[in-house]
Figure 1 (tube, one colour):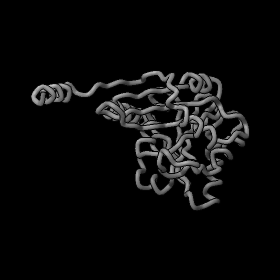
Figure 2 (cartoon, one colour):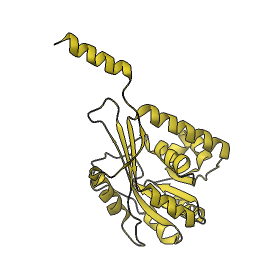
Figure 3 (cartoon, helix red, strand yellow):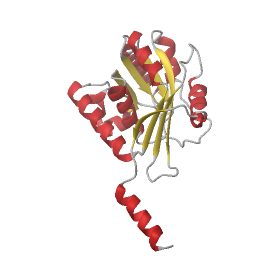
Figure 4 (tube, helix red, strand yellow):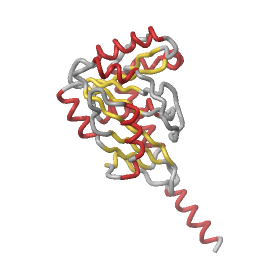
Length: 227
């Protein structure tokens, strides 16, 4: 297992960078359920379990955990990726060898130890590796449920992350937090349900960016010239 080596300076810097990257890339960033996560952090630690579909997922967890929720955030990563990208240790990432059960047990105990106080947040992607958004079942590993059983002070939230292209030039990012998962509840089912209900709406806009005026102007000019 690779432990975190968190740096306050580096965490703030990377959180700002995550914010800039997201604002530059996505036309809309919309969230749901953030207030209940924020309220839970005021009284105890929080464990977030989420689907894992994209390179963007660690960036999103940085944005939400540090920039939006202002939590003392940590995240579990595949040790191979953490060796390749060691700077994530500086922002709270700790690594596990997904093919070694003994290492998995060490990472589990480490996560439980982190979840010991209000304001602490641990983000876990139980799929272990990136998988298509439409994949069913999601294929969660049992680690997050084991952490939840042992970290009894922690409130567990399912989180659905979806990146999509629609009717606009820029892609859309939805981040939806469901109701807390009861002790012993199935994490995969809760995240799947949250993914399936994203289109129900009721989101709060965190960021909106219109396509560039140059694009709009060129589009109108082409439309006028080809009439």
